[in-house]
Length: 374
Image 1 (cartoon, rainbow, N blue to C red):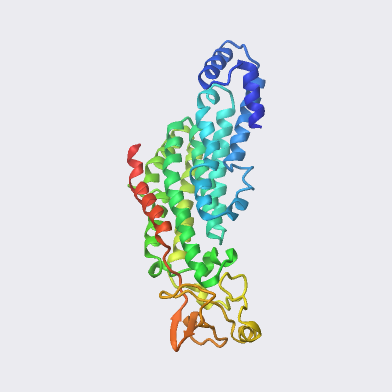
Image 2: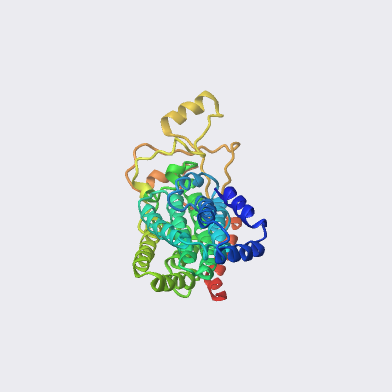
């Protein structure tokens, strides 16, 4: 659709340059020198490409599958690069869409549907990355709504502020997933499941603080980044259509609801995986591959052997120490108790290393202050 739209406008104007294309097309439309139906069709095809690229309704179904990649890549895709390209294209073509009948109404209609749909879909997710992905879809709906109501500057502003806040949230979720993998191993169904999290504040305080600031920013709490841009979009929506403004404000309320749902399920309360009937012997990167021969394999069958990283030790296949988890657990914390040389250690979530924390802190500062540039 995008390529056909570009070729259609080239056939009409004979140019790929933005400025020449806008000038020629404005003259043709004002002098009735172009077929309005064909021009509208080309604009619709251009907009279709932007809809697919930015996961707007109804071409949003690819979004959950994009969550399978590494979290830093997800942060780039869903914050500043791929999904942002479509809404940036619409803002860049704003002088063209403004003079074409019905296209502006279509852009605003698709944007407002996406805002509400993304917010409601995010409410139903248990996977922390999927919930943030649908949150991105909803926020891109706000950015798509803005040029549809004639506020393309607010759209570009929200594109920038949302990029920093959402990158902070995605990297924070990656740090949380990394900390959960110390318990459940590499198992996305468990390490990304918010239902199994909780009480992580005392284990990952830096991640918790940065994630909390990103949550407040996305909810539109002053003076954080997204407050300034989202407030401008909501204000302009009241001037355009009270009905659109009511839906947009309702979606903004849902944004606060699902973001604090993510935050509370992840960081507050207690670590709910302690109360799950979970042995850690399947789908785990830490369960032992028997390299000790037949005897080690038999011990593994009896006591669910696996290797553990403690604060004072590195994971090593050459260690002479064997760690085990008993089957009969009375205290929930004993599920994560290990016995080594008559000393007890515990498996628990841990803070990420500096290579993950430094980008979090940088994005934290941008989230605090980038809103003032507007």
